[in-house]
Image (cartoon, rainbow, N blue to C red; front, top):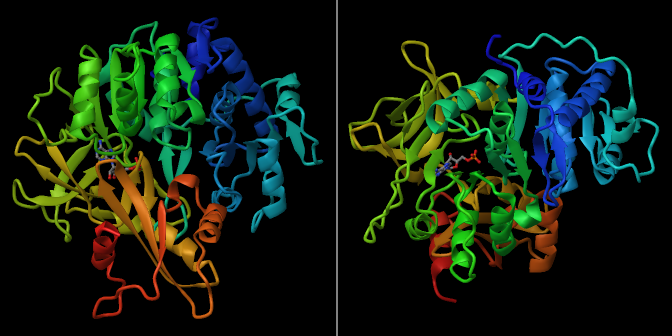
Amino acid sequence: MDEPRHLSQLLERAAARRPDHPAVEDEQGRITTYAQLFRAADRLATRLSRWGVGRGDRVGLVLPKSPIAVSALHGILRAGAAYVPLDVSGPSSRGVGILADGGVKAAVVTPEWAERIQRNWPGPGPCPRLIVADEESDLIASEVTWDEVQDDTAPSPLAPPRLAGDLAYILYTSGSTGQPKGVMLSHANAFNFLDWCDQTLGPWNASDRFSSHAPFHFDLSVFDLFQSCRQASTLVLIGEALGRDPVRLGEFLTRSRISVWYSAPSILALLTQYSNRVEAVPSAPRLVLFAGEVFPIEPLRQLRRLWPHSAMWNLYGPTETNVCTAFRIPDTIADDRIAPFPIGSVCSPFRARVVDDSGQDVAEGALGELVIAGPGVMRGYFGRADLTASVFFRDRDGAAWYRTGDLVVDDGFGCFHFHGRRDRMIKKRGYRIELGEIETVFYRHEGVDRAAVIAKHDDSGVSVAAFIAMKPGCKGSIIAMKQHCARYLPAYMIPDTITFLSDLPTTSTDKVDYQGLKRLATSPA
Ligand code: AMP
């Protein structure tokens, strides 16, 4: 049989190979087998197809992490459509705006989100058909429940053509102009990554248990969801609350016998910190992957001591490419090492270069922007041809290079060292934040005259500081301003501090003096 090139084939094969094997296990230890997962996905795909949802269409997914959410995402793929996952705890306006921007034809949602979508749908397209995953809810005519969809015994339609170049999912990330941008990834993009994982991180064990720590709207989840399915292994779901509680998480790791772990570094650092204080060390996964931000060396050294035998990797890559460079962490980390480890060498078959502003290679050992080409690079930003064009450039051979915005130095052996960003995007606990998006939200407040947001880096990590000058006659209130932010931004983007100034410092050209604000933010009160 040919190797699968469409993500929906992974579940099909896993269900045929190991129908009774646990496919998904939730926090309470409840199991969904591969046969059950496949059936649930097939029922959803049948309903979506009957509604005319198929190749090229988008379907929203706004559910807490659960076996239903996993089946829904597989069902959307099985129908030939692309899933658009959203943060279920995010603000209504942002979520509904994303679903409208993505032009979703249908969405699988909680009752609360069904109401939000129907009440606030902005158009121009019609409000999507909704499948509500809660039997308790009072339904409006245009909705059906998940259970109704599951109980429907209509025969499955013929599978749509499954082409590797088709859109598989759209992941929305923070956008500097205030509008989140939808990164379009195809099945081929996903398989480029999964193949690299097989070649580099495999072989896998039939008994492997993969953590699902990242939410489904983050690209780390692509590994958890599809690599576990490709091996017909078990995916162990970790919800938001457990995911950020290091004490419970440590116990959970041991109890749930997770063997393959993948997350941002920050939760691993916390886990290490708390493990020093409790008696039982969390059981070591055999493979530990982290990505999304720099892992500072001290907590990493402690993690290494805690789990000396795990294979550990620092993976790097923006959502636009998924993982594109990787570095294997050595078995021991010298006591006097102070620099973080590099992001490593390029993952085949990607190609990587370090260039200057005009796209010319910099001299060996010089600082430049990392640019990436190859089959894992995204198709573009959904509906934003202008923005897509601005992040790519073509070389003389016609190859399209994606500008990561990350500054790196090549050590001369093709191993890249990360030196921060060239723009105003930051990472906070693994979350990608465009400071410009937060500023745009402040400007939506009628009392704000000028607003500027900066990132502060210290021993405890990254925090976001906002400075605001109110219009004459308007009084600034920190509580009111945080409430205003919460209407438009997810919790992790709400600034940690808000300072009201009579005027913001400016440069000679009347631009906000960000350097001046940084000095202000770090000066003692
Ligand atoms: P995201 O699109 O959320 O995956 O964020 C991508 C950005 O996170 C990259 O462009 C980098 O700035 C940063 N990043 C990702 N992985 C790493 C890593 N291993 N080390 C340092 N920064 C990273």
